[in-house]
Length: 366
View (cartoon, rainbow, N blue to C red):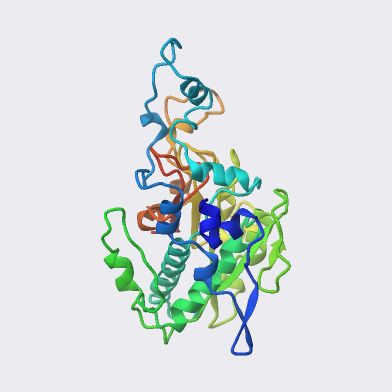
């Protein structure tokens, strides 16, 4: 019923939506507006009956289920719920919707509010970093493990709308609201920044094709076939000694739902000089990387190597009594929780008691 009622959900459920399509307006071919492609958060919550669902992440260690030592007073639903580690009793139509899509790469339900919120965050960050530079800086935003490439496509269009409409939240029809209904004033205030002296970043999507995400036959969506490591090596800024005078560049990396048990972030934090001279020390290649998905105790990346969760630390000699500092801290990066964005996320494993996906930034030298 939800999919029938809301066209944006119907298109996405099919796995082949109207991304990149055009329609004729006054005789001119233009891309289908984003608000007709991407559902709003409120629409998703209403469509799937999620009004009483948590909009924040609750650690797995805090989950409490019924005692299953005795099955005498338990329903079949409770028993199955326990066997599947808590994924039944608190689930709902949203979870069935994700499973109906039959896509192994489908974890995040991109929505209008989140895409515009992330686009604005990136524009603000670039502007902040530019403000302390003495020379113009070219920014590349690189999505690794990008799958079908839709995230970069949506961000490119959202950034264009924000800049074109002079960062007006009213004109852009962006609604960034917390659960209590109050507007996110700090985000909206930032959206009023002057757009006249800003150079738009270059956005690139890369993926090695191993998860067989569907590709769109559209000139607007391009996914370069590169692994995460290959992509970082190709688009990393050159070491200072190799830069042309008066030119500078930076790299911001996005990664949504990194494969479980795998850590790509160590390659994100490698020194700039190590690409050409392995083993050398120095500043990390990437100015900032942003991870989207489950964190700390989930299935995205490695809970210690990626997120720094000490409970997931495994010592080579088996002595785990002393846990070293988180790898990202050791490499000179600071973790920043982007809570305003996390509140806007809808993901595959969300349930009534916890919203599982978050957006977390790791900034170099912060």
